Length: 330
Image 1 (cartoon, rainbow, N blue to C red):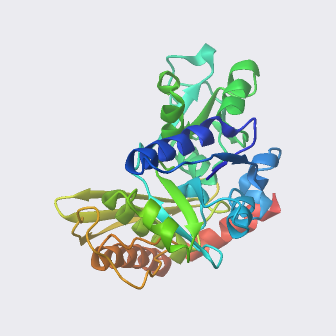
Image 2 (spheres, rainbow, N blue to C red):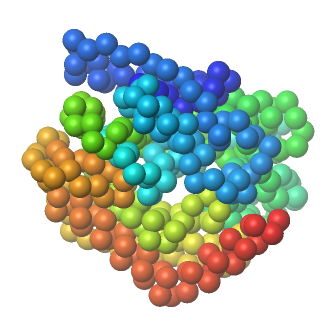
């Protein structure tokens, strides 16, 4: 089993991997699990914004090479790091129960007690996400937003020890997993395996959380149809209530001035875990879930396609095209 990250960046990756291993050990007490820490391109390139690197597999390529060479049998990722189209031969064999999907703002010690709204004019807020920057710039035009890279420890150190940032925006789930709630992907973990390795698929399939799985299928379907990624500000959120799956998606211009959002819903049955699913092991947006019935999976996928199509028909493509061009130009 592999966890994403190098020696300096493994704290969160190791915690995430350990949590999956602990669950598997409880389910399969007779099996032994070895954890191998590995570095990825995304871990090594820390002086360039993610949106400008131009590589879709920043946090996955090296790990998939290890899978392909049978050096590891499964890899634990933050699901947000996995492209909506995986390379041939790989699949997401488990989508674990999601933690908080929200963003968190962490302030420089001198601004403790402030809010983004009450920060002084021209205060600098750090984020590695175009989506976060665009959304916040629209709501807080008095602030400046700059790129900040590195693992959680590095970003918090830059915030606390340097005078460049008044605050930084991070994923709440990462802070919670590190035990740093007092400073307050996304929120879901995905386990990638070889698509044809049925023994490993059966092993990790029990980790599927049905509700998180269906929500993530809808979200990934929306992003795939929009061709959203790190180079454009795209956001998506889901909720399940009273048998309805709600999907909200939106696109923004880089400066947040233009935005387009909408919500759609579909009736969905959240199955009990381990109900019989499809026998032929088909993937939906890179996910294989044989122990989950096919119908709710298809309903979730179709919801994502429908919302993306609606936004594209309303002009979202123009906003995204301009955002890509401007991002590449700067």
